[in-house]
Length: 471
Image (cartoon, rainbow, N blue to C red; front, side, top):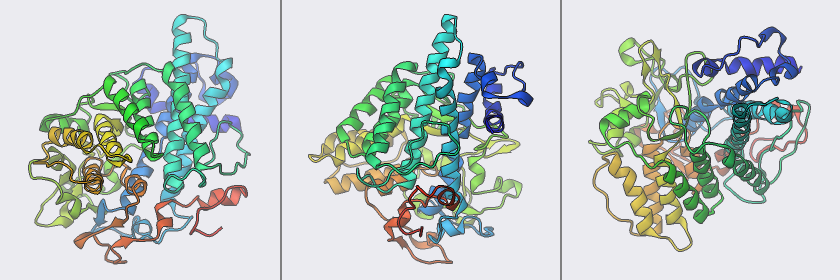
């Protein structure tokens, strides 16, 4: 069982190890067992790298885009995703299972390494240093994936509400129950804190691996979700002390999304042909329109209309004829010739930290609307987003920050989390309203939390299903 499982995990990591020159020809894939894998630091590193490749970025992006107001039903759609988009999904819907099993698969890689850490021989200073850094990366991966899971499969933060199983073993027969959200979040923060001192501040050449900057960026979001606004600001400032660069020209904004410019990034998932989450651009359109692509999902017209004409993001994010929005495509992940839609997925970048600070300052019991506005303005100025005016109230601030987040992080797997965190409803307008189920607003709060997959609840009688989805 362990041999089969680890084979799968290692094969998932091959695209990363090739790119990082970490292949070890002495590792025979036909005889992989744990004892052999963890005989060297190099082999153990491959397991951690496999955890990065297993992060379910495509599943997260797709599920959130379908569920929220980021898309409109495309003219060539043959039923792709309509169950989620029409808000009629069940616990058997595949889009959510991809998030659940993908995240726990990545966690399994992290746990494999952590459980075998003491057995990995490291004699040279370089090996000792690398081994400790890998421990930090594994802890960070475990925290990151559990954070994705709890935001997806638990409600808006409430300490006593059901969290998600925080898995720290590798017992494939375990049947864990659900702890509270407070317990889940405490475990996330504990792993992140333990990872932090083991990681480099930043690594310009390997931003697809966790660093101190990426950990602090994640912790800023964790604190924001927990309504710990002072901590969110502190963590964001610590990340910004490491990197505060914002892409501030058409060329640098374009380059961020073609992967030519990584200066604004703390952490991304490296995507290459053949990887599990390789082509985020192909989630909505089969290929470029000029090449005869089928448009399954158009970008939201309402979203497009919120961008100023000169906004650098509008030029990058959309493509098509504005006289016919049925030809419009999501062009945030353009890929390269011959590999349509294959781009790195940006998980944390500098814009995140400015907008986390803006929201945190605005939502404090005693809002600091000036500090909030200055953080918000930093992103808008860098993106050439047009004229801005100061916030008039806490409500005005939160509403405008959320709209800016909608623009900035469209189709990045953030929109549902942003709305749920702030108690806002998903509303589609005008031509964006789904014609086969023309309800403009999702009022069922249970639907803002994903169902635990049926296959999981059938296999584990101890795990409780979320409200509204049956047993």
